[in-house]
Image (cartoon, rainbow over all chains, first blue to last red; front, side):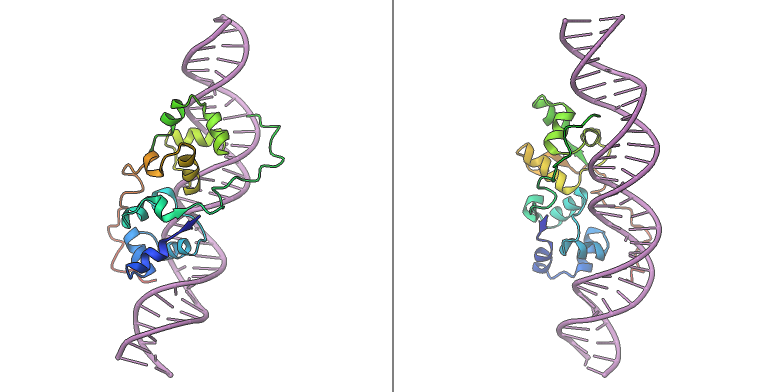
Length: 81
Length: 81
DNA sequence: TTCTTATGTAAAACATGTTTTACATTTGGG
DNA sequence: CCCAAATGTAAAACATGTTTTACATAAGAA
């Protein structure tokens, strides 16, 4: 998943710490999100979208990561519950 | 976070297992999401939205849960890193 | 150069999301 | 009633997201 958090933050001249405070998460979380180390939870994604007055889709874009199909080879034919 | 997954699934006459297969997650995950036991990851939310050809915002709605402010009393005034 | 702010990183602990296995309950059709 | 499919639930294990503490580095201002 790609995101435009850094771009949107810089447009507003906010530091990572500023943004973290507004979102009420740690600065490390903002840093990790900007650097693509992991994706935010859905609730945090909503907070981010609201803060920037954009839709989630305008900020986050599936990029061939987890939104793409998993590799399922060899995992079928035995799927009892 | 509220969601309309069950409604959208029933509109299409799919079982939870059908939907799980389409999303490539377990049936228990679909059940848990419908029953509001937890929110999906952002990537899974995207998969769900795409499957139903809707935006994430049309399916998921913050409902006063984690999207609302945390209780921050007494947590400020000492925020060194 | 020194001080300060901003940013990158790391490890541990903890919280949340997901799978697997397994079983119970409900529902509708025969 | 009986049977099958659908749904609800639970515990353990594992994966991912988040916080806390702590430190390193870069860059700019004084």
